[in-house]
Length: 160
Image (cartoon, rainbow, N blue to C red; front, side, top):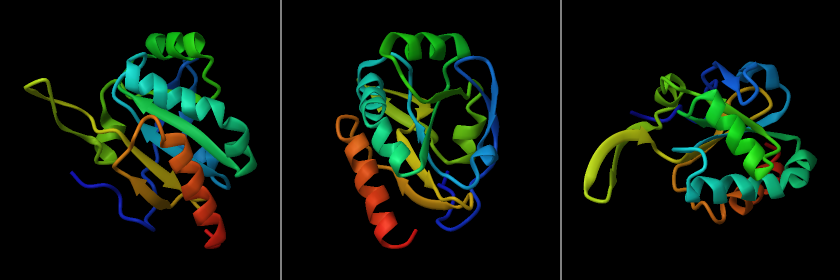
């Protein structure tokens, strides 16, 4: 699988959020979108990553950037995750991993000696025109929020 090419239209989709409401990517046209894929709600690494983004929400808002977090968890788990950790952005349920597959982030993983299919932790920055501006395929959960802000600031200076 491959990621969508830079400069191409980001594949549109509609998924349910943690409140059971439908959210469509194209409804955010005109704003930058950080679309980030994570393996599982309420696990240690995913919690660190989500809380980092939660804590820089004001900085993301100042950069006119919306956060959409996608995992294969059901809506009920996402609601619990958001409530438990006070998450202040949209969590999306990609239960059949169709969106993850569209974005090339569903693949073979290895953990503790076994192999299985799952989400490859990846972030996609989508520009105001709905095009793929950047793909972060080497994500460090502890610094993800800082890495995203640095990317946005660099994109801003380049006029992107």
